[in-house]
Each structure stands twice: as structure tokens, then as C-alpha cells.
Length: 112
Length: 114
Image (cartoon, rainbow over all chains, first blue to last red; front, side):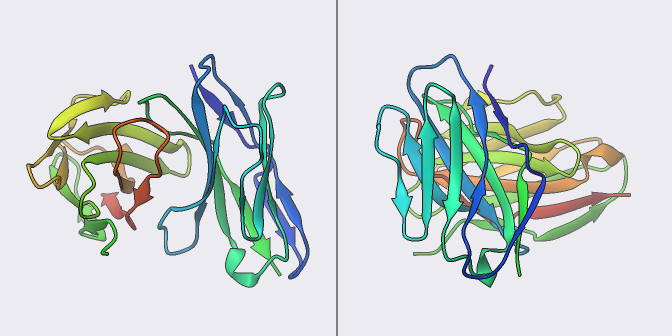
């Protein structure tokens, strides 16, 4: 069974600084995808970044980047130049083949 | 392009009642999935529909059911409501059949069971 673990329930960062959110996962599948979703107070889940497991190169989307360590089954999210609008819950998720998304418990990020 | 639309946004029901939630996917998306979000259990997968067929189902009791119409709109139904069914119900749609595609979520329906 797939599992996703986020060990940081809450984090805070000063505006303009960099913060890294941790995520580890476990899967027996060889073909899988990893995601970071953001859920602001509006409750809508917004896709931040996606990583295909077979790609070695770490995904990047503007200020957001990931550090994908396949052997260690680690998938951390780095937010650079943090902005007040980044304040939200962040969920790490995995998906294998045609299966459903498995979410971590989330990390509440506050940008001050 | 309009996003995923869920109605209603808020719903208050009493134990024993039943409820139907609606989800309209992004135009052209044929896959619709449902998730339940609670503070205690987090986000849990309910079911997924693709071209009117249930393709995947999570570990929820039979009181939770769903369907998808020919226009890809989906509904989920919960019968004999229990207090523990209070949750945010999120719907997501996607374009491709193969896993790994982006899921686009709606803003959810907040269900309160009294």
C-alpha cells in the first residue's frame, strides 16, 4: 500500500525567505507520480508542482522547486522568496498508474 | 475556461437524512473523483468515475455512492447520515485516462451533520 508522510504539522517563515517542506513516501510501484498541492483558506486545492518518478530532473515552477530523492523516497518542496499569499496548508501526494491520490496529513505554512 | 464547480458550498443535515452533492468538471474532462477531508483523517479517496463508469473505489461504507452522467457531471450521495460524515467533500476532474495527470479541484462542499 502507498503511504505519504509529512512530518512537519506547522511551519513559519518570514517574507522573502526560503522554506523547505518535507515529505516521504512509500510505494512498491515503479511508475508513479508525486505532487504538492496548496490549500488556502478558500479550501480549493491548487496543484503547485508535479514530479514524474522516472524523471531524474527535479521539477521547478517559478518560486517552487522540489528535491526528489528516489532512493530515499523523499520529495521535499522548496519555496523561495516566500510571499504572504503562500500562507496555506500544503499537501504532498502520490499516485500510481490509474490509482487514486494518496495524501499526506499536510503542513500548515504561515508566512509572516 | 470555467473551473470545477461544486454545489452547494455548505450543507447542514441531521442524522439519518440523506444528501446529494454535485460536481461539474472542467469542460472536456471525463474523469471525476471525490475526496473526503476531515481534521482527524485528512484527505481520503471516495471514488472515481470515468466515462460514466466507476473505475476506482475507496474504503468507505455502502452508504456512500456516486454516479456520473453522460456530460461528465457527477453526483455523490450519502444515505443515513452519521455525525462522522461531517466533512469537506472535494471533487476533482482530470483530462487524461492515464494516471499522473493533473487533478483540478473544486472548492468543496462543507457538510455538517447535526
